[in-house]
Length: 367
Image (cartoon, rainbow, N blue to C red; front, side):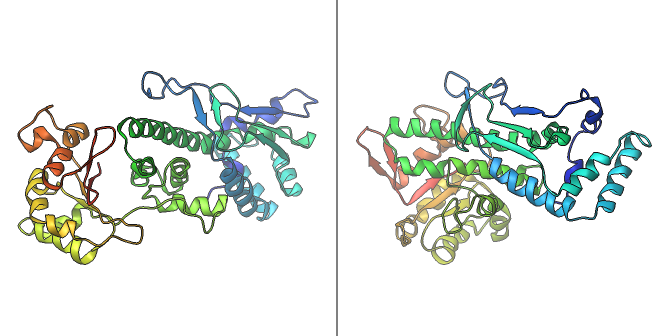
């Protein structure tokens, strides 16, 4: 984690509360409660009314233990107090905050708090507390809510990520059952590419919440985080497949794009799954002409140790529904038919027991 001073990982307004509590205060007992689902998107006809509780164990280990030990308790008291006073005096005014309680906490050598929580992975109704916190020594009553800022900052996104993933898995599972698609594939359908779009390297911890419902992820640090703070050193918790990006396809050149595809699927990755960006020049040409020209090479690829030999075409622009499903119920042009129907025309597939078309297992699509 990026360096942070744990004793100042709070709002400024928190630092003066010790003096504001009534004299004689000995215990502050607080809860952490998901209060509202008003910003949650609807899943089907209703908003989700539960959250998936996740992230507490990692937060306790990484922040309340590691960060406090490394950057507070193991530093000298003089250094800690000098830094604290400098921050308070500079930002709030000279002598605005008495640091004696911070010095006392350093002398104690640990955080005197008790956390009670529901088991991680619990589905919890909105407005029901997922955890409570209280101080265990009366002189540190101020610490409970001093830590509230960082509890909220670290846990809300973990919970939101895990809950969002859970809701997507419910949707994908429902449609898989309705259409007779294999349920084990659902674990890979909701793939996480969020790392490149988050606000900083530490934010990758929130991506671990995705792995409470899915196996597919391109966020390597999310797996590292789970291994470090949730164990499972030899447990498979997430994975991905080889894939290109636009720079790879551009480097291969427009006129020789078909040869780039051929080299990728026969030489670089002759077996297993490989995902190839297909809209670098002309997606519909790639899907209808290039794929047809390479049909035998695609069908002849060698299955890997778990029986997979799939070339995945990746459109990366346009409206996903239009690109995948087409713009007309009965279409004539590739754009009207959509990508799924175009691949069916070339590679075929099977009709499952519920009457739905299943694409040939050697080809696929990801958006």
